[in-house]
Image (cartoon, rainbow, N blue to C red; front, side, top):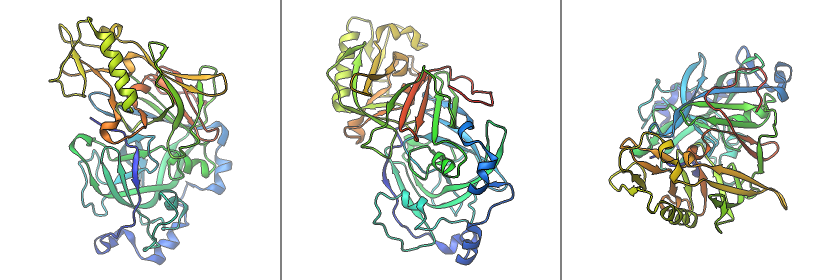
Length: 433
């Protein structure tokens, strides 16, 4: 079971074993001269305006994975000189993109590709990228030429590393192929519970902060600061950076002004079967780093109570022996698909206030909160967030965003969604909703 990668603790200054790492750290003078140079064909902020039309381009990535049984979605990025492919776990709940790194590596999990060999282009402690990753402006710069970090995620997965810059090889929908130099975490010490292990090389941070890739691309004038994804219930899907043509089919709600770090929206009311439940003022974070959705204690208990009433007499019985997730039900015979049981379950929805009289409704049909386990039982893909330390936060995970085009417009501070066919990535040069 994978728990959402919402960052809980970020960035402490640490000291690496420099004698073991000197091969790639290099001396200070060499680092300073290399840091400001561009590789041949590399995009820089001064050349980007002529290379791209910022308001009319995007990057589209093919997504692989599923909610169950794989438990995560990933994309492939080509990084380094020469470029090498890496599988990265999609995470809208955090900012930093990082790879398990041969620095050398103290603790690394098994990866699909050889460990990343880091560049010697270190990010100094006072660099804006490093500063943005600290929880406060009061942090120690004991080693000014290096930016060391520790990130602890909500599933207790943690990574220690150093921030550097390397080349990302990107294909834009307008035909441009660019080498863009951006920040990258070199994770040399990972701690991961067995249940949180995924066969990936690292994490793709898609959050709102300055260190996220979309923010870095936008700051270089290459793309609009917009990111989105479309995850298919059949597995796979696509993700995109940059320009999106708005459509009347997209429902928009403002990002929460009280949470500048996550893609969150507040003031939501929980609906069950299209009817008000009395459970309101819910803060919801949209997080692709979580396979499942998490409700706070009160919303979760209300949901369980309603489900028990709805399922009474429906020939569905709790299956405590199925440990896939906390709550599963079995029928008279094993189920093969959600279509066989969706008639027993009512749709859910979150109704967000967008103005004095208008509301944006995020619908969660049965197929967006149920799975069929490998034992043939139907299981609830909404979990109790209070049991994993999430407090009052409600986290909307992959399962509840299936077959929806999700758009996070950081420039307009809006979150949008619409029902979509996510099975195929857009092929046209002009990507539109």
